[in-house]
Image 1 (cartoon, one colour):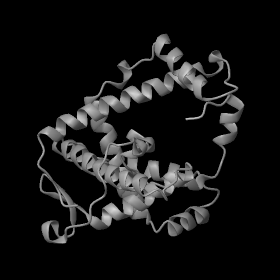
Image 2: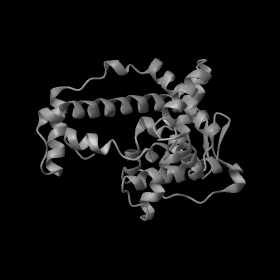
Image 3: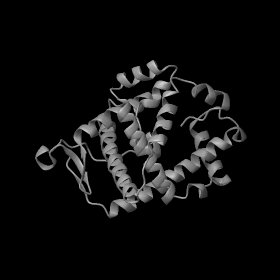
Length: 242
C-alpha cells in the first residue's frame, strides 16, 4: 500500500467506475487481493485429474466447486491483480494465485454453508438496494449494461453474488466482534515507521493517522475472520481434485 496525503487520496478515488466489477462479489472483499502475493506458501499448480473429481475442482461437505467456476474466478482475480500492477507473467506467481483462489472459494463455501445452517438469508429488497447502488456508480444505465456485457456478466449473476455477500456479512457480524477491534498508538506508529522505511516523502503522521488506524483494524479483522474459517474447516469434509 502506498501512503498518500488526503488530496492525493481524493484524486485517486475519483477514477473509473469500471474497476468496481473486476471481481464481482467474493471472499476477496473480505480478505483482500494482497493475500495472493504471499511468497512460498503454495505448491506448484497441479494438472487437473478428471478421473478423480469429474468436473469438480473440490467438494466441500458434499457440495462441489466446479472447474468452470474456478476458472471464471481465476480470470476475474487476474484482472484485478493486473489493475494493481502485479506481473502475472511469472509462472510461480500465477500458480500461487490459482491456489489461493481455490482456497478462497473453499473458505467462501464453508462460510455460506454455516450461514445457511444458521438460517441467514438476503432479502430481495436488500439485494436490489445493493444492486442499484452499484449501478449508480456509472453515468448511465447503458454504461452499466455495457460494462456487464464486456465482463460477460448478467444482472442475475451480479445479484446472486450480492446475495452471497450479504449473507456472508451477516454471518461474520454474528460471529466476529468487529466493534471491539482497535488500533493502539504503538501499532499505528510501528506501521508508520514500516512505510517510512520503504517510501520517501512520507506525509506527517498526524495527516494519515486515521488511515493507518483503519489499516491496522482491517488487518486485525482479516486475521479474526481467518481464525473463524480455520475453525470451520477443522470440522469440514474437504476433497480437492486438482
